[in-house]
Length: 436
Ligand code: NAD
Image (cartoon, rainbow, N blue to C red):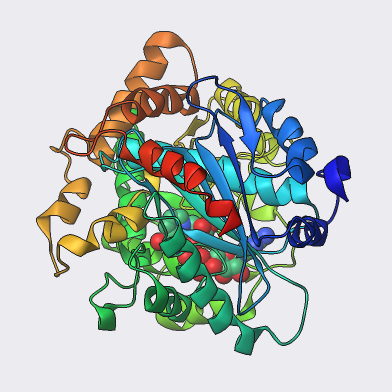
């Protein structure tokens, strides 16, 4: 296969190239001295060249690491954008990818996004993300424990330059398996001393962001407002409760999963609720006349097709990477007079909940609760207001301003450890990690 490997090939070609290269590991990294993009094996030069020439998702990432799991044979990866603020931190996604390109792009994009989220939240963590290529086979449930034990071993081998956590496709029991084989993880189940379900706090955080944005728009509080939400999963379920406490007038929600709809229908009755089961691809919830639209399902739902239909003054939700094309879609909403709260500004509480669980976990912890406090300078409320004011002054979109602020903050060095992640990556490369 050699340097013929290209990134429009299936993920299995990447696995084959790794096996043919000898070891079960590979890395790509930006050389800190020369700024050049390098890879561990010539077989990946073609893919590395494509990444280095990319202006969309590659932003001089410090490193990407790949390993074939010993027990599972699955392709495991960890992407590290920047570790100036601390070790790279972000969850591990378990997802199906058609091509090497989509597999690597997701890791590059999500790791940078995590760095932005961590920096805006004032956490001393850098930006990282794990991605495991899910295979299309029917026997996954038994295999999962091997996949995640492999992932933990992979983390241990990376010596702590990246700390993993839960993300889409990964479940609490999977995190327990990761924890069996590494200490480099957060978001472990509460029976092991972890922080447990983050969705309750995420819902509370997004509601605070909605309140800040409504005030910035001069629309008052949530009381009497109509909210439309896409997705009625974990975050939405709790969000409905908090919105009801704030005496919203009406909530309309849509989900493709009958069980999710049934759960809200059973637990939230008696108010002005409209719960709808929809088909995949049915985006009619975006056309709902409302004050606030909350995209709480999956990414890329705000795009050229949906934005022209929106009938809300404010878009603020929990889903990650809501904009299909960040610059284009944020601008399109601004031009339509819609205030869009960048997802990484609103949905930080999931990572806040678990990021520092090694320092102790208890109910009502002020270190966590204060992120919801309007007085805290780095809290959700004040950060939202800061970003909206910057956008008003510059004419740029809140998404652009939030990203610029996050970039500034992600260059602040960790007060104790400095840029140690880079040193660990350098050690892995010189110690021959890829040959191990
Ligand atoms: P979840 O999987 O429990 O809920 C998502 C729901 O969206 C599911 O019920 C699913 O059926 C539904 N859905 C998927 N596609 C849909 C579509 N096209 N139309 C309507 N419904 C659709 O996930 P969650 O934990 O509630 O998280 C929601 C979003 O917020 C995700 O994007 C997640 O990555 C993000 N997020 C979650 C947290 C957290 O703490 N849980 C933290 C940060 C970000």
